[in-house]
Length: 362
Image 1 (spheres, one colour):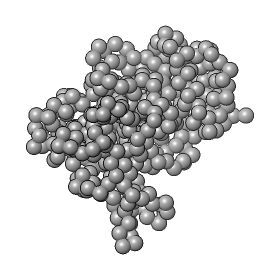
Image 2 (cartoon, rainbow, N blue to C red):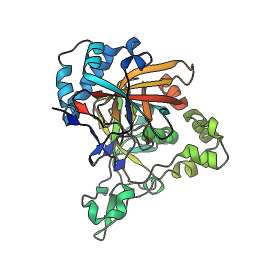
Image 3 (cartoon, one colour):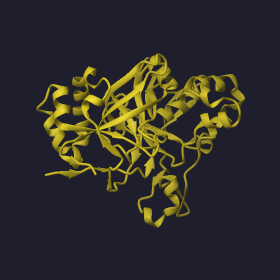
């Protein structure tokens, strides 16, 4: 029996996580591709890719299109044998061709304290008690662009507070306080991270919720305001500008009204699939085009060395800025090197979905 592969359409896009509504949309923007056409496929560590795929299966096997192949994966120890026997590569294409944008993200390290001090004064907030998600979406279509996030006042729904308004509050529940407002902002962009407390304890914080406001790029604002050129924009140049212009920090950060709330977690970074992310083996994707749990072979390059990156990865995450047919955010792991590469990465690349053979693609 063949199954048709349907993709999930994102209704609510968050940084690092999403609330979803499933719509049946057939994949039509792919071309069948032989494995031999995938540059470096057989040179990759396909056994590791198989291990990561099996971990993703703990969640993705619930989807009809992955049920059989996830069960079948338990019978294989050879990644090469498993993927070549059970999947057919399909290159993603758009109206402009088969190349798109590959960026990078990482798990940041911040420094903090359980108690607020003059040094540790910027709170990592838990989900506010007055933040609600509207369930009757048909009755409140005006909240669609607000991801149906709201607060209730006098029995009516109102848009939840912006970043600037949230930062003026002092009644929200706090996980801990950190020493750098800019690092806190980028923690929200990444969606998860670690905090080394002044007690010596290292804690993990992960995405819990979002205020519903649309994500706006502060890099684009710096370009529009004439502070940076388009080709100069990176995590490093943005941080450098803000650190060198402290009076501009609030204005620039408040330009992005989106605000992410966190929860303390036992695990390190987990994506939207809710499995621990593996450095250089997971990507964030636009689920309108690539379902979570899908093996994807990426062909791109290292932004520093320009060496080729040809790897089989698993789609396990989403993000507010990850939009488009040929679009992926490559998870680079934890630490200074990961941060440096993620900040620089905006490379051209190809994406090949490995479609399970018992799934029919139109």
